[in-house]
Image (cartoon, rainbow, N blue to C red):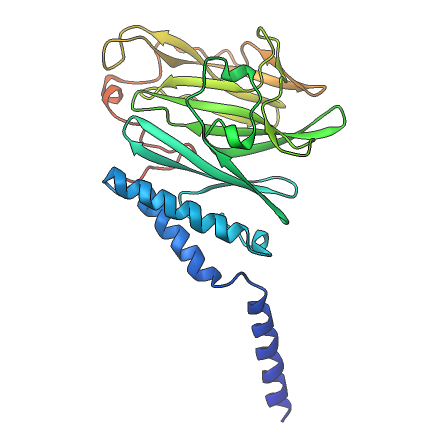
Length: 291
């Protein structure tokens, strides 16, 4: 009799736990995984776009469900998820065709969801403007760094944007949650001309340019770029890494420019003739890309 009672209690609590989950969580997760995979790997442009639209609808419905914040999205391949103190940001990339990529995503708190809408292309001056989530500089965020400024917490968001088959851009944006609505872009990058609202590092796809946070240095470190003559597919000049590094060091709420972090400039750009006609084999996290 005691064994029967214990078995009943175990089943009761197991069932009770399942009731607290979003409806059909495993099915929803499987759908998002399927759409994300198809969105990246389908050969036909129209199939990738339809998969993206389906992912957008499914993700939106899931995030609006009560308690959905409790369930991880980190294990879904091809989505990028970064976590703040009490929120997470989910972003992904859609290749509409070989020379156009667009981005989508959400910021989610336990009781609120904000949609990120990629409204590029921007006019010149995107490094000096603040945007709302509805007018977002689209990218995939691969890093987040909280910092203090005048008693408030802000976040550096490190991102990647595949511009086209020739150039890419790394981004260090600033997420401002101090007001009633999120904003992106704060003039905190100082010491290299007019204060910048975000860092934009645009480089040739044949090169490789990193942007990361160095905790020991207390700054954002990225490759220094030099324009190399005649290396583009039509003979145009393109920016490539010269092997040296620049940094923006956090000081009293601002990120202050430091021209050269390490004396490591190379005599030749870090690329070969073989790389000039093919895309980078590694993704932004250094993992081999799937074909």
